[in-house]
Image 1 (cartoon, rainbow, N blue to C red):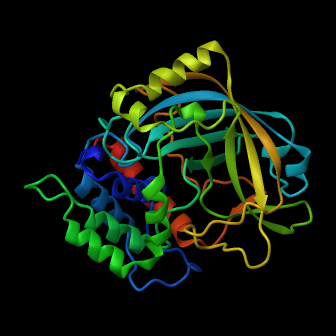
Image 2: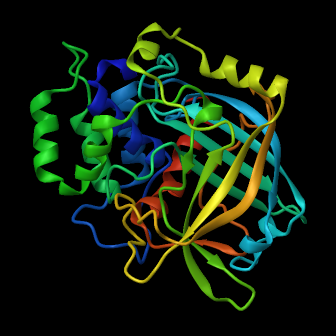
Length: 343
């Protein structure tokens, strides 16, 4: 399925869901109960049913490029998390910027979410992964609901388009998707990877030196500013420009993002990624990401073999019981295994 085959709003809602969950599977213990439990292979099958099978490629966020740089944390973050990520030392970073969905030929001006995936190599060799998209929430509250959306959005072989009645039926029976649908109705793609704010979507735990847990969400805010495309720019844009523009941007100088961490208060949703926190929550700068180079993704590039599993965490950062977050690691593993085996 070409990502451009879906109507603008429905396409974004579908891809926003896919972007955070293409890496997803079996419900973890402690996750909120769901009427239907699904497996990682079932989720990946649903992706392949919508986008087709592309041997050796990622099942989601297929189109992308590699990048590299460094991260330096702040003392404010170190007060809430004992992670070496916030030691104040320079941490090497391998990054991947990508376009949501399983279509490697999707036009860059389509309103698919932009993705940023980061692998930090901490002192001593421990790894910390962070994966984000340029949307503040996820489109469903459970893996089962997300898979139902993928099934509803599967294109009809005769028309190449999803069946409107199936999408309507999905919306009527899945109230958890309402917030994502509303977001999709007015979402506009950003002009460049380096002009996008990327969100954690999920809630995480920062664990401090006294083992006290702090519920947090974060976003990476670009110092180049967040710029959305106008309708005219979307129409006139070339098919491919995101990769070229980021490579050219890093040749002129580093692209920089500030990691802004928001601290939750009692009653803030912790396990439902479709619900946003108030902007009034206490927040601070937890560090600075500097991307110094970007290269086309191909075999041999640093980011190409990395799985970017968001549950790969070093001491001091931990997951919550968000069922979508906990489901991602097994699904990433299925997709990763197929990719490495050339399937």
